[in-house]
Image (cartoon, rainbow, N blue to C red; front, side, top):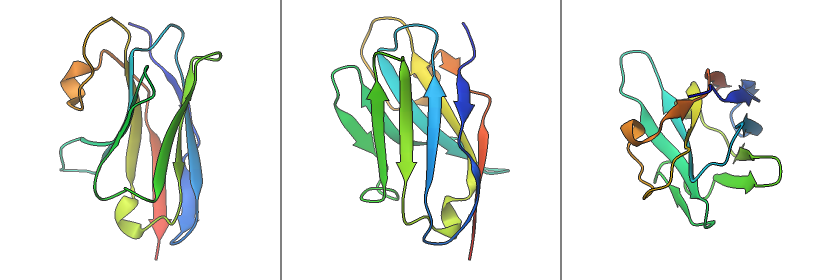
Length: 121
């Protein structure tokens, strides 16, 4: 597996916005964004399947939008109205082999290096 190229993190004030980007070298059947804070388990944030179907965690629904660019094999996470509780290391991940898509981290075979998102109050 090849590590994904991930970017877009930073530090913003509450209410601000960030856009994360993730680039894969091959076709992605399932694409997702996860986040993790120290001492906590990695949790799914937003997902988009190759069909275009999306899924969001309740905590970000209405504020975050996931999208994909099939031509560039890239997908994005637009994060608006950020809250301090959104502060975490964000990871993108893909399933590059055909099969059903799921929201569990262990079903994804290729991961980005992580990008830090910090939201100040």
